[in-house]
Amino acid sequence: MTPRPVGAGILTILGGLLVLLAGALIAVIGAFFALFSFFSSFFFIGLADGFLILVVGILMLATPRLHLVWGLLAILLAVVSIPFALAGFVIGFLLVLVGGLLAVFWRPSTIVPEVRVIPPTGGAS
View 1 (cartoon, rainbow, N blue to C red):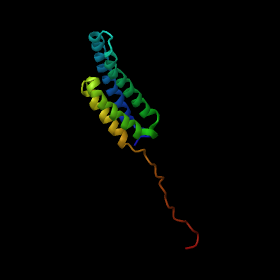
View 2: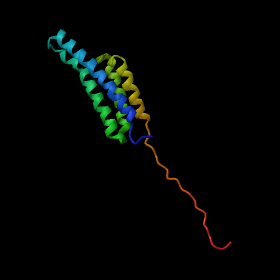
View 3: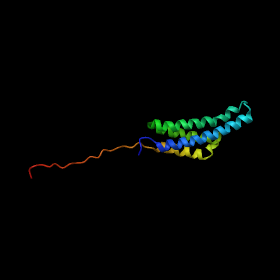
View 4: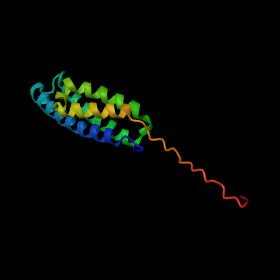
């Protein structure tokens, strides 16, 4: 096992990029059709969601002792991406979901020292 959840972090970052891309697409379309009305900021939630998923993926790698918090937050943000960012073209949602689950169930390796018993080589037999 590794000293940090590398697979979880990489999958979350890759999924976050797709969610960010889908969120940017929704934001551009929303800004075009809403023409900066009251609801135009509503379309930027997907963009913020993708950015937060990227930050969570980086934090999984930076602070592995909080893997449970980052994993649960990644799962929550993946669910939020469904209505606001086209679920990151579905692939982004799945990558973030798997990355979050990997982070939740990741356990740091425990290194057990190997103890060898050396029989005494005494002089009197």
